[in-house]
Image (tube, rainbow, N blue to C red; front, side):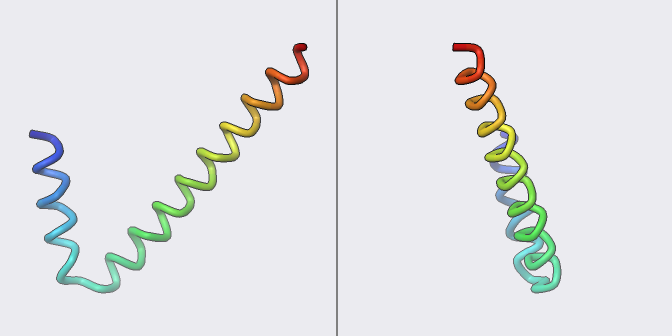
Length: 49
């Protein structure tokens, strides 16, 4: 059910290009911070060994 709501949300945004631009920028920030976090976790594991 949540997935359907999310798709509906994306489709609604789809009609507004500016919102899509903002959304992709936010998405990029999330992805970058997530990979950064993963890298930190990985480094932490290496340091412990």
